[in-house]
Image (cartoon, rainbow, N blue to C red; front, side):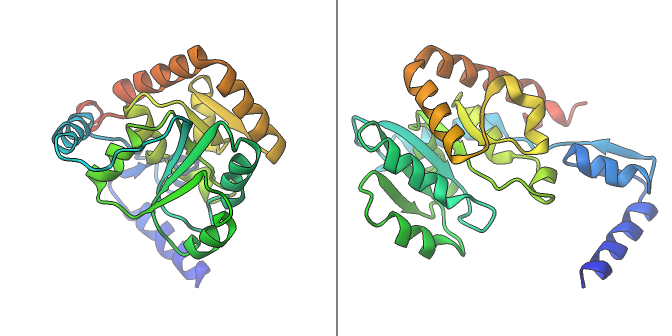
Length: 231
């Protein structure tokens, strides 16, 4: 089946007048089949996000009440997400952090079982987009705990772009597509490096602010649909 899908995909690429690739590795795949390809990564609509938050803020009940630092994740809870990283953070920083997780997916039951003994892991479940963004706006640090493999290396990280739209610093695994943004991210690879990076973040609020601003600048200049579509 995988071979059939690959053959069909390659045929479509080779026969297309124009190919748009959302990641650099996808461009490498496409260039051998079609010279007319363009790198067009994912983006966000900054105007729409701002409108949704302004409108929702007037009536929203999505208020996070805590004195702890808020680490947050929004998205699918699936096998490409390193669930154990949530547990590591909750266990090693129980006094400092709350981990807020917004979303659902096939790995949700596993996450519920593993997090049941941790009061500082809060599972919000799935939320409408505007409500999810309202919760995101309250995060101090946003999480991108994706497994690094051949699939995720080819993913354009729209989740990170949404985080950056709110000037949030991001703690992430180093997928291939994220390497180009190294100056705006906190990278980790292992359990130990996750702990080390978190310790650095907790001790340096100015660095958090600077990384978040760097991310917002990247989104504004490269990943805002209103500007990307004009290029």
